[in-house]
Length: 224
Image 1: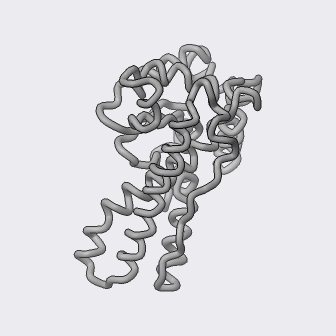
Image 2: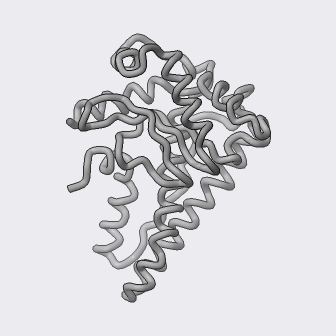
């Protein structure tokens, strides 16, 4: 049986696969609109990065996922289907991760960066000692990723605690319910921060949508 974390992170993707299997055709995934303008996260994340990241990189994952799913459902050859698993995982993960990522960002003018009193803050203080200690640990573990990947604040449904987890490449977070995700691929920061990843990681906290993170934690707790 799928865990709560797997169900949460891959709901849209797995629903599509079930529908596709039933119909014998692939339902197209689409690029989601951003809930803010491309320049809304400045000066912390510049407009040029946001446009390229959303229009080019995320769109490429959507296109790749649709292509891989079509090829998968157009063949009954098991070897061919197995050979497509890498493309499905990479592009499907990229689509899942970025769809989560856009929504866990918000302009500072709309409350981005503000962690209010509530269950999320209480859980962070309980599990990491303080909000600042949590950010320091999250930044350190995310910066230590070799190559490309993601840093996550995830909710462990077994221990009922928040934990910092990393995933490589575009692997989605399956072991935990994703609460906050940070993209550490170079396309997420290099145009503005060059090779200084830690500056990007420090800056992104000014536009983290803690209200969305609070909602994700509340849902995870409700679904236990």
